[in-house]
Length: 121
Image (cartoon, rainbow, N blue to C red):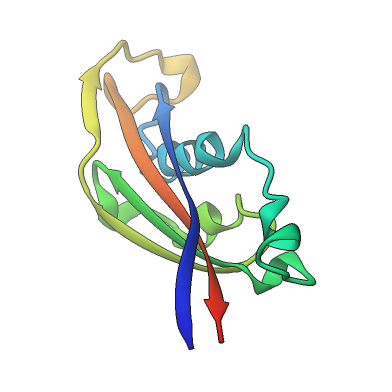
């Protein structure tokens, strides 16, 4: 069965305190989908349920090996989801604040691309 892309959404997420790449990645995915509605899933593609969508997520973030994939994918409410995490994004020097449980002064920035596809007969 062939797949066709409906939309590609891009986003950015930052963890300013805590140095958690999962937080930055989740925020990037949330940012990518935050201002979208997909009526074409019903009206053009003819899907009967949003879980029929195929959602491929790519995230570039510092320390990708530390990303908890299931938490990032949990941001997406529907679909058959996959996640690819790669090294990228950015580390920016911020300010460590002990009361916020900072380990160091790094701010982690992640970028994400969320692609929604459908299967075509």
